[in-house]
Length: 381
Image (cartoon, rainbow, N blue to C red; front, top):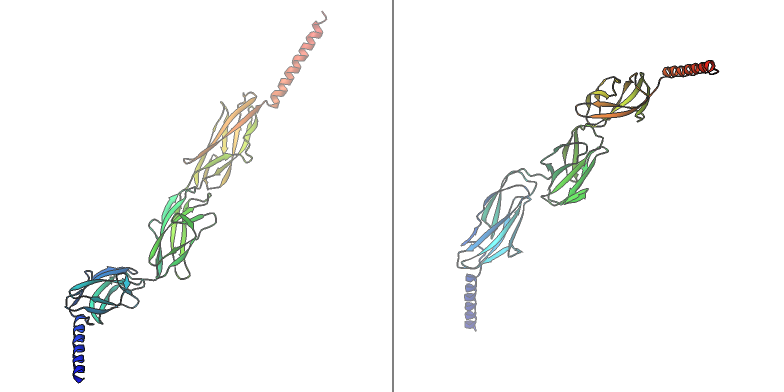
């Protein structure tokens, strides 16, 4: 029985020796780990994916526990065949490919960092990651064209880039700080919105359309735009430059453009001059087109300045020709600057003066008297 037991133990020992000679050792002798990109440059928030070849040049199967040593706050993942792995087995004179994913945090200092792959607890591959920018936990709101120019009838369109440089999805409220009368619309992916959701380390394009009030004066206007959440926010100031528009209106306080005048007499007419544009007008002069031998004078004959929306009055004195016969005449008055002009056409009705009426009546009366005398004197013969 002792001999049988000894033989049994010997056979068992031989089988175990053969097994351990052909099955993995938890060591990395004869195994190489290779990736071509061992020193790369990235920006905060980027994700790096390394493809690593594990080559077993020994004559034994290698079972190798794997782990990663990375800077604090960095996230790493080992995968192969679509699975997360913690250990890999490689046949003799064979190779396997694993993937190491490294997520660089957003909040990281600029500098050089080491990521070390460990096999069986010992370093087998050292990777250098150079972070080229100072990382921060923040939101960025930018535009390549913050300034636009147009008239008070223009719509100003800007394109903004909203970047979420935080590790969380952010839902941003979009806010425009404008005075009453301004209209601001936000559009994302063709839809009008008041808020927008942006995933970590991603950005969204926002189109901003700004319409100014119709009566706004020429000048430069600042439009603050803000994207904010309870944790983070960013802002950008857009600039709208309103060019002046020119317009002039000439009329009377009542709008009536008809008057009566006596031949040879004068008539004063009050004119209203209004700046209907958004730019100031200067050196407004007055002119008149009249019938022959008529005259028109203006007081004052020039308005030095007229602000947008402002109205001033001018007195025009019309002098009719003394030989003008009764009837309707046309007098055209014009206000003009190099930028704008307007005219008012008056219908002027000439009436005979009382003096000439009395003379005419006396002549008629005298004529009747003479006829009566002649009839009385010679009519009986």
